[in-house]
Structures are given as C-alpha cells and as structure tokens.
Length: 140
Image (cartoon, rainbow, N blue to C red; front, top):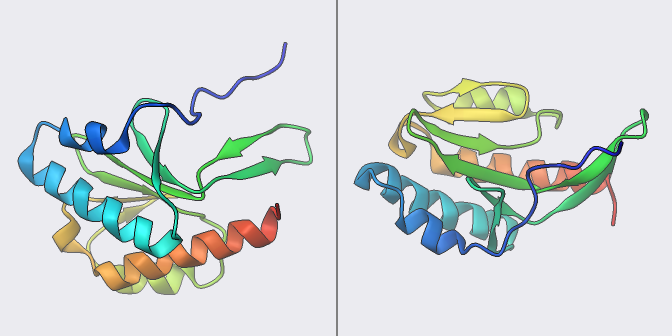
C-alpha cells in the first residue's frame, strides 16, 4: 500500500483562510507573515492541507524510497502560536535562530507567540536560506 501525504496543495484560497482566523491579533500576524514569506520567496501563497500556507514547492526522495512534495517554506496560524515551517538543515540556522528573538524551535519548525516577538528581517533571511537550501538539495 502506497503512502499518500495528507498535506498537499488545495484549491482553498490562502487569503480566505487567513481572513477566517478568529483571533484578530493572530489574523494580523498571519497577514504579515504571508506578505513577508511571499516577498522572501517570490512565490504566491498556496494552502497545503487544511491549515498550512505554503510558498513554492519541492519534490523530495529519501534513500528509503519514500518521496513526496512539500512547500519550500510555510506557516500556520495555530491557536497556541504561529508556526513557521523552514528547513532545519541549512547551515547558519543556529546563528539565525540566536538572532531571531523570542521563539521555540523544532527540527523544521519555529514557533512564535506573536510576530512582534521576532525580528522580521531575520525571519525573512531564514526563509530565503531555507528556499536556497531545499532547491540545492532537491533540484527541479
């Protein structure tokens, strides 16, 4: 039985998704994050699954044979925090995280309570680095 990813591009409008975010502060952060990531990547926002706004895409294939598609970068305005999906493997990430501001980080995620808690220039730089890293790792 082949594995089928649940997180795929959808036809849902990212703008409509963001406009439907209940909390006005979280909605404002999502609008700002969308603009920042769109500018950083040069890609339009696309909904991936029910709750991730992604920018660009790449196709990956692991040594195990597992393969799929994912956004180059993305974010999700969750109730608890704003989650950014960025490559966890690019060089310089630890330096960028040190300069980012108040956050928590997982391997490929960065969690912030409010966008005002982080430096948007560093977040933009992280998005650009993530895109460059993933495009080099998984060319066309």
